[in-house]
Amino acid sequence: TFNIANNHLADQGESGIIETSKNLDELGIFYFGCHDRQVGECSIKTKEINGRKIGWAGFSMVYGKLDEELAIDKIKHLASSTDLVIVNMHWGVEYEHHFNKAQQTLAHKLIDAGADIIIGHHPHVVQGMEIYKKRPIFYSLGNFIFDQYFSLDTQQGLGVLLEINDDNFDIILLPIKSKASQISWMDQKEKDIFLEEVVSWSLLQAEDVDQILSNAQR
Image (tube, rainbow, N blue to C red; front, side, top):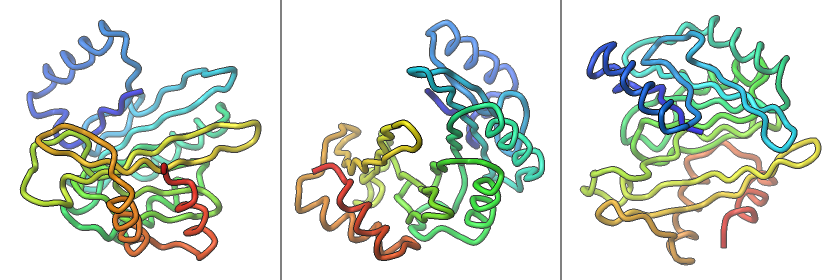
């Protein structure tokens, strides 16, 4: 799956969006998402995986506010017609590890509407996470492959592995690092330091911290 909702999707205008969609279709890549601040049919998509119908949504709110009512309606529709709803959000302030109130308020509304997990990106660094109504919110996973070599923070990222079972899902955190855009796993010492920092940026109960750290890849 490939979320394309971000603030650069329309850099080459409407023709660029059309060409991007055409190329992804020809490559057989499953994708979703509209350009920044837009909510429409391109925002959502569904796919059946191992007998379960999964709903994906992609939204971007970098250069202004998102139409929250439309976004919430999309999530309600997915929640009523799928077994699991995964929301990708392009939001937040660049290089800030702490998520802001606008992110949190919208995240809670989307979960209230039926989202099961929210995965954020845009700040270029990892932000904290939160568990709301037993649903995880990753406010920013940081960079994956990006030519920002000027700091350690912009060369650290977080992967999220979902293991879907009968009535729920488990999450495994995958701490990664980048050197000259080459991705590798963090070693044990790096992971321990990094995950402690992630916890410090997060809004979590003690039991959630224990579970999250125990589920991090070792």
